Length: 113
Image (cartoon, rainbow, N blue to C red; front, side, top):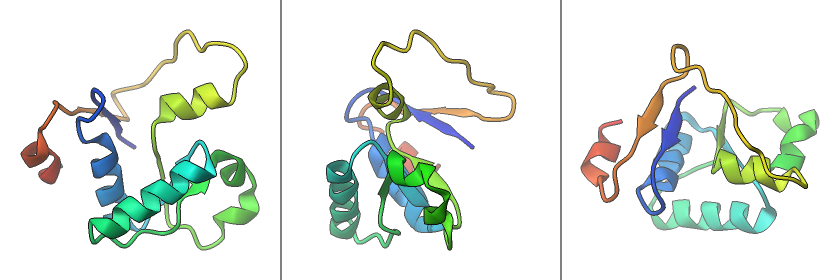
């Protein structure tokens, strides 16, 4: 698993959509409206992806049938949407799960990931 990080509008969502298409991964996001937006964006980019699901549906393991793998869109937003108080910190093991840092407007870099 990789953590794709970057500033707003740096290409994180583009990368997730391309990874989801390449691996036929189901994208998990915080609400159904965003799931629909992701699906439409992928279609407009010419990418075929499984229909994205909400985290609520992800928690229902019945929705995992036929799923090859998952991609999480905006994990920070997803985690914050599940709590009623701020999340102060989290840990991430870069030994087993690398961080891919995107620079703003780094489309050529995104293509090579």
